[in-house]
Length: 123
Image 1 (cartoon, rainbow, N blue to C red):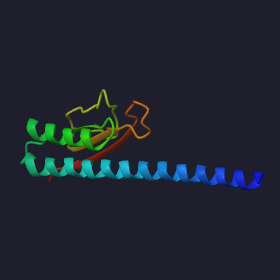
Image 2: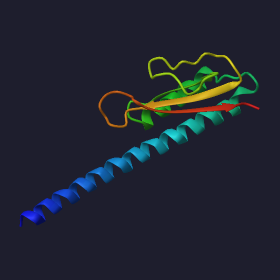
Image 3: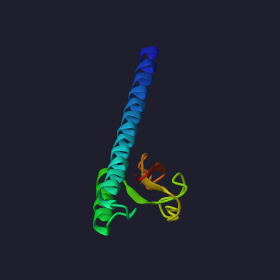
């Protein structure tokens, strides 16, 4: 009986880990979709200016906030797109690269520690 109980507890632990991992993958997929959307909005709306309109940026940031837990994001010109934090996105406005940076709270601890950064060039 003890062996069966330990086995069932182990299976319950594996199931919990599986659910957590699946949810993390779902959130990362949503962040990737939102980052691609931000890049496409930049490409479609920039028309050579290299910036999004304030309305477009606000609409995209609202989509990030409603889709991801504690989600926030930035679309900007940045020479080093793979840096920054949720409170200081580190968009330097320099260089030929543009960046889409998305942060969210993957483990629901109240801090947006998960990040996806994507750099791209406008042609």
